Length: 253
Figure 1 (tube, one colour):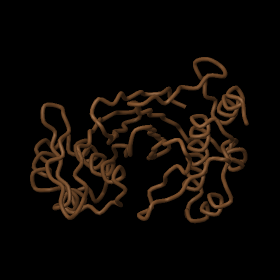
Figure 2 (spheres, one colour):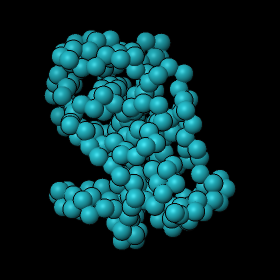
Figure 3 (cartoon, one colour):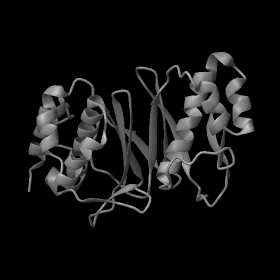
Figure 4 (cartoon, one colour):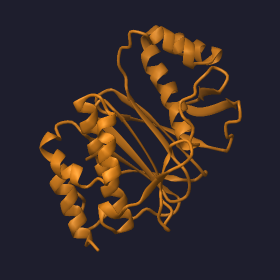
């Protein structure tokens, strides 16, 4: 079994992470969700080591990605996921066993329940970990989109569209906010992105995200939503349950 200090050395060597105290790693307590933020830009020199942390099955999936930068992003995010899970479990990164549910959502195949989800956008990745229940997280860089009008029409309900289009200067920001609301929720319940106007409707009321309606057999549990931002014009949403959960923003990597 690795010592915690060796885990720390792995993170330091691979990503230059500076943990608060050498040899210590945060404990995932009941009632907590940890969010880690990782930049996967400029990791070319570390790719060989990152790739060595992956299983044969994960390595085989690299070729599924068409472009080199998306391959590199997959290698980095999957390797960091393994390292972070191994730190929580106190085992070797390659000993972390993951499976996939019927609709593709990955899960941890160990006695200790740790639920997790990841999202990446334009070189930045976020990881969410919980010991209490499923989580979903989505991150998007706010950017110009040539087909933004079609995306708004296709993916938002009438009330959502009214809110997004009410202020043209905030249209892009509001669209991406609602996109992350929906995708983080669908990832939490293990669904793919099956967005039609009748499936999900969200609103923002007095700064609080509210899920107004859920149709077509989607799960309607009492989920909570927390927005977050990242430098570089990123917006994101965390979906979690139950109430009273403490969200801990871990240091950026």
